[in-house]
Image (cartoon, rainbow, N blue to C red; front, side, top):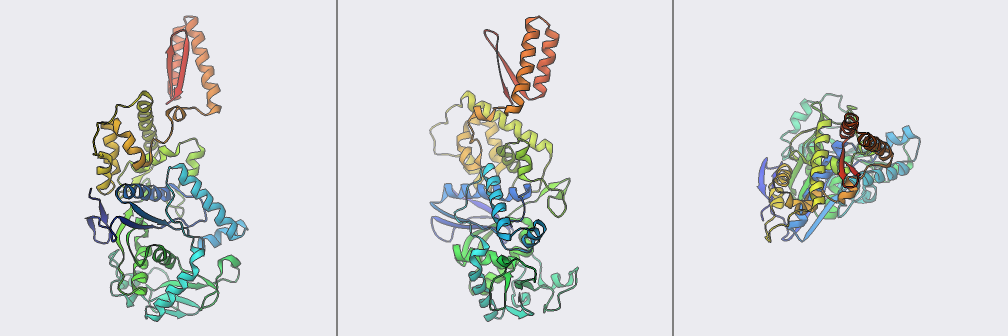
Length: 441
């Protein structure tokens, strides 16, 4: 089977060919652990989880690396606001991230490196860049000299001159050019000791971009197959990764395929913490919305397109999954004995999750094939339709009142109570002997 992916570097959909036969290496930018993951963050994790599942179905060996950024200016700022040690903050937020992504049925990556465990690798890479003439030291900072890389801008289409001309803020006086970016920065006087590291240029911490270059090269090699992340990372983060990686390792092309997922939007604006228009995964889980419903909603639009988040999307996803779980509960017809896998075929075509979902609606017998590849249908149907305890008592009271109205032949009241139950999403099943069964959904 042929796998195709839209390669942002080539600006077209291409047939995927791994560098090593029967093996794939994929790196995806992970979370900066200073606060809970919002739904935009979750979309990226779910998208590359599906790609990991598809690759694992097609290749015997898949190394999926997703990092944890646990040293960053945002982390320092959050720790100061909370008046807590950075190590306590990053440990707690990392666990939140793991818990929330597990609720969305996301598999663990093969490797999950923490930036603070790879400081020596970052320093060694920076030293190579200085030796190669691509970086310079200025006022205890180390900066990448963008104009030394003739191919800078090949991913985003933005050139160093455009970046310099479009600068909207004053350029730091220690920079040679406006587009030069930080590889190492000195520590601030009030920084937590755990965010300061010894280096040839004094105590400080790495720039964000060098972290991913060092960790990906360490775990996957200087050349690997796929690099993924959100569309917002294409510039400057991924552009800078390419520049520093190819300049540090002469002859390297870094990643062959660059895959970018689209934004999650709210009323047409990108969901982000800076805009304050975000909803976290935990917000929805705490409201009783199942992780699988959130996952289905995130997969309902092609990964490369913007996805506008709204209540209707969530409601439609709940209804669709309720329908599928009812069919599973009633018993699916067996699939014909065949080696064909229509779900995998759809996903092998640039991860076309909407097509895969449409195939399920046409032929629910494909649900077992979809379960592993889409990360859905992991619950027992009885558990899926189980109502939370706090709702159950109130629902049972309405059912009892309806039964009493029926016994008194007050059918108008019985119908009114039934309508009230239906409005609550309750399905009623009247059985012989006056027994009433019910379920939510």
